[in-house]
Image 1 (tube, rainbow, N blue to C red):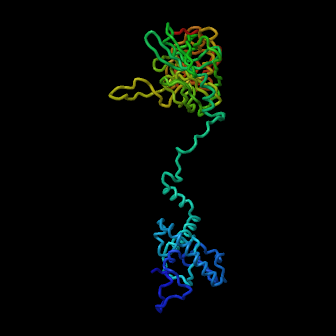
Image 2: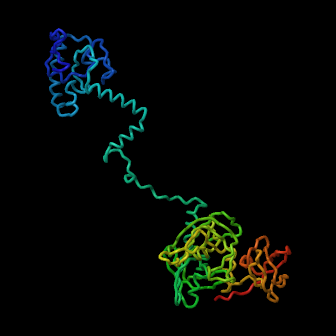
Image 3: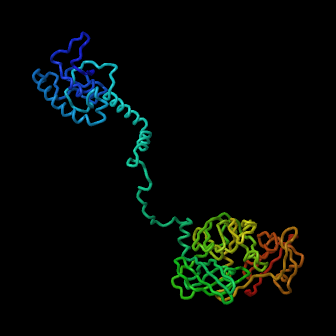
Length: 481
């Protein structure tokens, strides 16, 4: 016997009125408390029909015989519903209180709702209302729990299931490293060099469509006496190259490939207009990694550096651009480029502090330490043009030997007879502290400052005693070693 059984005795033990008596099995089909039954009774706010006034099949003034007919039809429908409901787990938990309130059945005539009633009807409806409130206040939290509990077949986000983005087809922004790389890489070559006893590789860049390539002298020097040079272009094409001329004093050389067609020459910039801190991009083949691009800034200008590294002497001193763009062995001869894609220097040397190579051994090869040096293109342009025109380069000189002065500057040791230095009035013992507006700190600084200028250029020398001298620079052919 259940709470809704019409045959249950009332407070005096007597059964309900005859017109309300129903078989016990109907109890399983009784809708939840509060379902409207016609008349003036209001539906329970917890029921699914709480917003309806009355069922169309239960008018408030139905005749008695019509109610009996409806009662018999309802019983037949209830029998069919019970068979289906017994197969569900939800029906098993709701056996005491009837079918889910969404099922249309003949309503029980119940006037009051017991306060202690418990069952799936009220519980489910209550949870539904609560879920709506929570969902409105914290929809993000609800979505999170839904995705966590959805399993592999739910709505969890998986990047592997997303479509592949379309390939970027727009050009790189002007002034970006990407745009510079797109412009310059087709002009950069790897130079594979071999001689009678040694071999190596470096970089270079095309300066003319008919095959002239600029590089460092120390890159191609091993092939100067019967060796071979192979130029490897960005597209993988390989061509044999020969030396046109080279200048060890400025570490510049020109080679040419034969039979090359439609080469892409670089654009040359102005190295005198590059301020410290401006962005640059370095190209080359470090450690045989062809087509490598690195970027950085100009760290300093007018750095006196001996071309070819520690093996150089005063005759190889150059006034270099210092950069922190990564430069390693194999970058030598490659271009240093501004963000307009113009070459402003030639990668030539790096500073690499000695460090242990492990097991008590010193490192066998210098590597990048963020301090690299490039030959200014304004100096290299003049030298390369001379080599192409004559096969030789001309070295700028003053005709005096110098050394470091103890108090700073370059001290004149000896002056050649008839030299530009003698004609300007320089004497042994004089200490040069400036060339034009450039401060000279040591002997290499003076040599580098002279080398950046062309023969017949005029310069003002400031001495340590504040005297100034005007000098016309001389030139002499370079004899390759």
